[in-house]
Image (cartoon, rainbow, N blue to C red; front, side):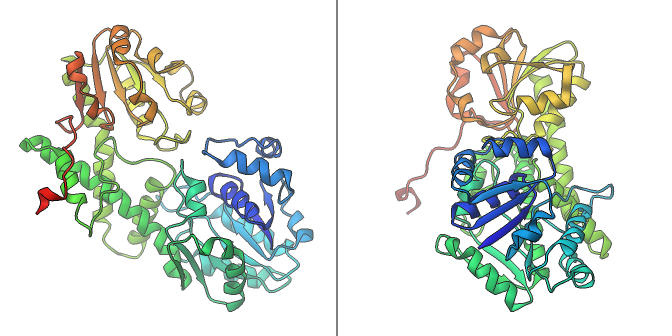
Length: 447
């Protein structure tokens, strides 16, 4: 099948490359000329494990092409076109759909064959209806609309696309369903489930999913605060709560809070929608407030470790990406931590395995950029771990200790908690008290 895709960001490029790998002929439209130049050389402009190999393969066999001109889709005559452009937060916290609607307007004047326009961008409630009305009013031929939200995790997006937990498709017209059944046929067998539904429900699923994950993270962080006040061990609490099959263990890791391109933006958008409809936003406003408070907590833990104000201290920071296995720093908690340290009069030196270029573009000369984890530890009063990269588990902590002015490590992700750093002579603290994880519980001990 011929497939178009508008946008070559995380979602658009993964969608284009994986659809092409599965045998579809894909034309991806991206207006950023620099990005297109890189992609045509099989170079991915961001870090996503496994994606570059697939890009190289699909370019070589001709299944994937790129263009900067959306009008090229007219001659290409795709049966489906994915819209994968950004929907950033607007000033009021809602999702800004101007880029989506601009693309819809262009498609209406470009497509000359009956095509299904698939909304894969995360769009607020009611966008499907707006798109459908605009296409009916402006398109030269009948065009159909479907909503197909993405659930890709940065760092494992290729796996998530190939083996999705679920494929969600909102539609009204049977032609749209038929095209999407053909389009997704190579993926159905590996999917946990395919859910066909009305467009409004499909639009809400993405927001509900991300807001619930944000809620779980803020919940466990609040429980961590409570455990620290009462002498409990939040890791034992999280283990006990996570063993409940109704809850599950995922996203119950206490730490610096959530960030990235999805959870903060989608939670804000949901709050905006609830407010516009006169519904209670208190639950999710509390989620945001608790998440924001993690930075103040980290500063207090650092002050306690150093015995006073941070002004004049030198701090090393391990990690800048919002999570491991990506170079994405959008709304990363590490950025708020770094800025708070700078505002406190602290000299900051940062190392991240993949996100250094993005970090330099944001902070410029305000901070020092370390060449590796050891350089970040050199001549500092304390280290703060902000991103849970696996390589930080593999460093020689004897060497780290020898490089530091004081052997102080504040583990904002509780990533190093099993290494017994206290026994190596470090002052080691997490944001929530006890550093050691709970011992594994055997099946026999439950009887």
